[in-house]
Length: 438
Image (cartoon, rainbow, N blue to C red):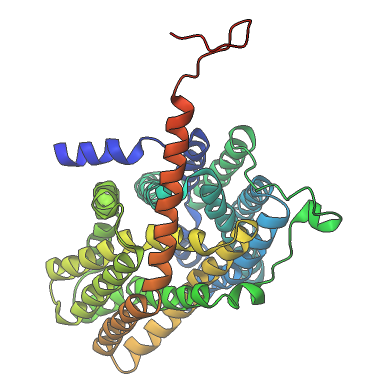
């Protein structure tokens, strides 16, 4: 416990106030995130729709995210970080409130689709704001802390939602809307706009909106395109267990309650050990960390084919959760490092699109494979994809990320030296212009 306490203290120190207000808004937002957690139950138990329809609606949320991520990235760079976050949060809140009254099949589908657009549009703004606020050599730590807040809030929402469900699903959705509005208020009142200023020499439309960078132009960046494609592979592995694992455990004759306990391990490990993992991985090579995280995903998901009891399934979840804890902040920091200052939002948006695309494809593919070739094929396939991703990080991105890491360390050293020089007291001149000692 003492080791975890020291790691926590060192991990949270030294970051700017603006980052902590952003962290607080993330925690508030996720603490009230009841819609996605209970949407499938609401649709099937409260409204009487089929499980197939519930799955389709949740897939539509992912589809909305595929569109919302690049849209949010563009708005982040051209409109600003704060306006994009506030608009996205308010749009999400409106969707949550609408679900409390909309009950038709088409109406629910449209609302959830638009919520996917709004929720995913916020994420590039958050990623770009962290890159703006936090020095490059501290960004991985900042992204890890923000991810920890996200999971802590989700854990609280799951527990609170389970207790509050006696008041009805619609009450939960209204609470979600209120928490999201509060998140927007925090951003509006406490978070400064951090979009980098455009040079005075730039005039006209570009002076107001910054240089134009399309999604196609972002994808022409070879190293970043490789990072996005490898992240898509990892995201497919990461998303597959959320559909494949309960189906596999059911096929082993285990009760749904057993799956609930096993998947809860994911949140418990992240909330309990993210800060310690961040301390251990601090200052490590990003390419090495992404390689290790991919191998952990490969080992955890691949070993699922050997599990047959809740304990063994839980062990596999622990392994790929460790990969998740290493991968998410490292990938976010690598995205910020490869992005030009004027296009941070677009780069974050394209990277977010890979997460949303995996969130749409993986559930469909996982369900199809389990029903067809069988769960063993799913888990062995996940293991193979993880190994391929690890090889890609180790060979295709090692030099690029190592070079950017060296540049970040050099910049940090220069900044530290400049700070030391500034801290040395300079004698003030006397009336005759001579230096006064003392």
